Image 1 (cartoon, rainbow, N blue to C red):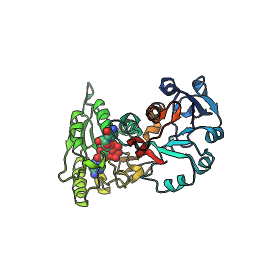
Image 2: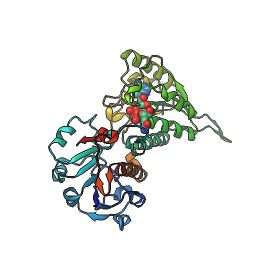
Image 3: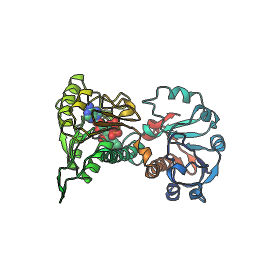
Image 4: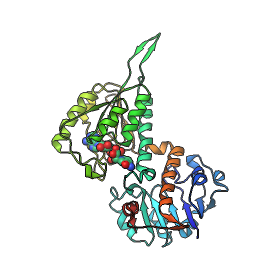
Length: 359
Ligand code: NAD
């Protein structure tokens, strides 16, 4: 038996779900790879790089004939209608954000597995696209801030005088936040960070940053590593603490999110008036409302000399490595859900149970 795996070209993303290098290193046996013409181009992988590894096919052939179809974002309804009934579509369906997706998928017979629903356990770590993409976004956020900041990140002692290091405030010390801390530290900044999960404290400190504690945070160990909704009273105290620190910060990187909910607003409009001229806020929570009250999603604005960048998809700006990492995550999943050249979707398996949103 053999499995035909088709990689579709993304319509609104520079990345591709599988790179030539991913296929070369793949441990999957009995697989025929198909790639849609030009699918890897915008990530830096021309069709010629896939030669000898995957057969180039048109989109319709992949939709109609492949057994497994890989994308980064779900294809549109016309594409879904063309997918053969026995196929498995692997994508990021974000059912915790998109209320329509389950009803849309219910119209079709194919199965759907959502990479962003894979449980965040030790076993599934190698398949965790949320972590690999968040890590890129955290890194990029700091580079973007440094580029927009009219000041140095590191301390500089030169014959033209001494320059103080920049101060970076990181709100939310999950995967993106920790990477933002590490990158800011490498660039020489002084870093402080907030989080509501007590586990974050040690991680923040181990990266050489100061952990800012606001007493009374709710931390639920049963939430699968995620933060839980905080009380309005706690958030008000946190906003006041953020304001006190923001007035001394040169850069704020916002990453605080609560899965399936609107992001908490932790920087009030008034706080911007207390910030130094030229300071930069990069809000990675922009797509779910933003941690800054003034953030506009997918826009860069200036308010009182403060640049506010609202961008929740910075991983798309580093498409080559982002594709490579995404592809590795998918391959690790495929090894887990195939056997002897066929799909082996065991519902008793916690990874399958969590991610197969349309069995
Ligand atoms: P996320 O993107 O959902 O949220 C980002 C961060 O914002 C989190 O650290 C969260 O605690 C924080 N946050 C939420 N509300 C806040 C508030 N009011 N103030 C300050 N911070 C706030 O989270 P994520 O980066 O996807 O991951 C969160 C956690 O999940 C990780 O740190 C880890 O514990 C766990 N995780 C586990 C694995 C694994 O075991 N395989 C993999 C990845 C992540």
